Image (cartoon, rainbow, N blue to C red):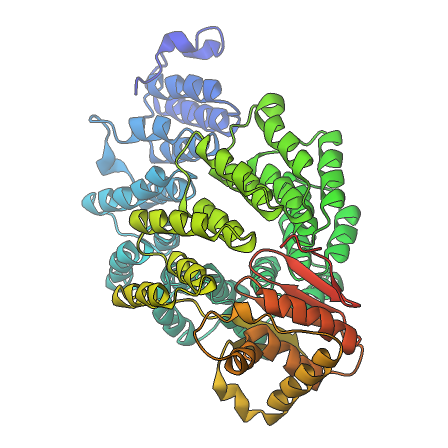
Length: 611
């Protein structure tokens, strides 16, 4: 990069147009002037002008000025301006101190660009080559850079060795960032927990680091359990902890805990910063209280596009498409320009409510009205929309005209539509082609074997399952969870260990008897096994969501609303059965599956079969 010359600044900073005498008093005056100019920098132009003054004043070897120069460059997102001067071939790096290197490392560690964060490691190496000793401020900055890399633990372990070498392994700030690094990958979570457990004294930052690691790695149950332990020890969570736990709750559907956290924020007068409000709004919507989310949204004084999108997305998942569209239009009316994520949310709302024309209009408006080029996620929403309403040929034609190669998710949407709408041969052809391109995904094997089962081609079904087994690919089991009295209970499909609770088994039998008397007929085609009809009916009993509903019916008083979270899509038989269960037991049953919410009440479901 070319450094600025005097011609860049003449007329703007008149005092740089004359050479400054090299005297101690003049040197100190130049130093103070340069520091003031750097403090006042508000644009790249000002920074370049000040750089010219710095050079002309002979301050390029002054560590204090260079440190402030690096900080100013970072604040203006112009790190390359700083490094081109600080580490030029003629730079006097032997005069630099640890404070200057810490500033450079911190500036790169905080950058949004991955390349800059990698450079933080390089500048640490340069610091050591200059025979400068790192201090307790060096390692937290450096470890934050490691934590944000794609391979955090491999680089982080090397930095950890330096931490031990230079005697900072007991520093609480260093240990907190070490936990943050090791909790960034599932493979090193146990070691992070070991570091956490060995901490002689912890703070909310320590707990947040470990809880955040569990959340990022998908272990939301462990995150909530650790938060409970934090409460038990009397440690007050801060805003960051609350945001992380809300994220875990959103994953688990733990509405009781979300509401408690909302009350805690009010009770402890925690500042309601926008990120915290957005996290609470998102958690309420994803845990099934979309009306509470809307009420919170309406009370928020400041709203970002994240706030608007969370409400639209929450309404979409609850099948309230018209309301979601109305909020989207309100967002535009408020002067908030929708981005690609907002369009995904409104297209999803159209999908779950069968709003084909509205979906087409919004898809077309992305480019025509907002200059947003649709990405594969937007095309996937349209394929999903056509598939859900039975327009299989229209969905297939849409896929053929896509400007990019359809991904496996889109092809599996089409296969699912073929299965639901009786286009079994077409679904088989698509599934076979997809297996040729991507032979490692369990879902494709499962849908193909299910298609064979529906056509009663048992030999082909077992051949597909055998190929799946030979490749070491396992089907993800159905898993449902419920929150009861502050505890999360999980149920796995077909798990006979749950027979130990005889009450659940007896409740399942009772549900079967009562729903049949009310008119329920098991959908035995959902059991894709070559077994007799009685065994098929028995197999349907052990779906995870039925185990969950039996447990809650057994453990709660009449009239209690039942909330279930399932990791997969609710099957057709359970969907039909829950309509009868809700009617027979006079309960409202809310099920969040992989795609959306289903609210069963009085023998009907809110999805209106757009699921």
